[in-house]
Length: 129
Image 1 (tube, one colour):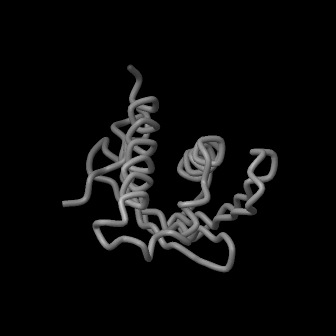
Image 2 (cartoon, rainbow, N blue to C red):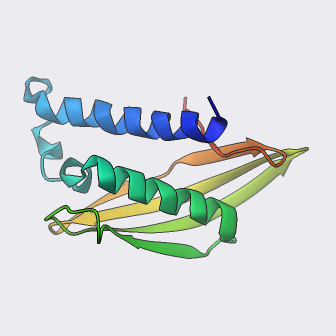
């Protein structure tokens, strides 16, 4: 399995876990019901994921990409601003911190993932400890 596929699966798994948590209101997570991620369908996830990787590959620090879920056949309009906040290098390893703001139905959600790659390899989502 390629690194990019593995990163895609990690992002999808995180989305599915959040979706399961949203459905399980017994954990007092009802406040998440109206967050943008709760309106996302798999096609939205796939589309925004592509926008994230395009941003990682093509944008400089401080530059942004705007994403809208047009064409994903979701009746809820969802948009995102994806910004490269910081790039750091250590030897052949490059890491990039992103700031992602998802918006849907008047609600916003801020995400701060970090992706790293070795040399010219593929970006991998980093777990935060």
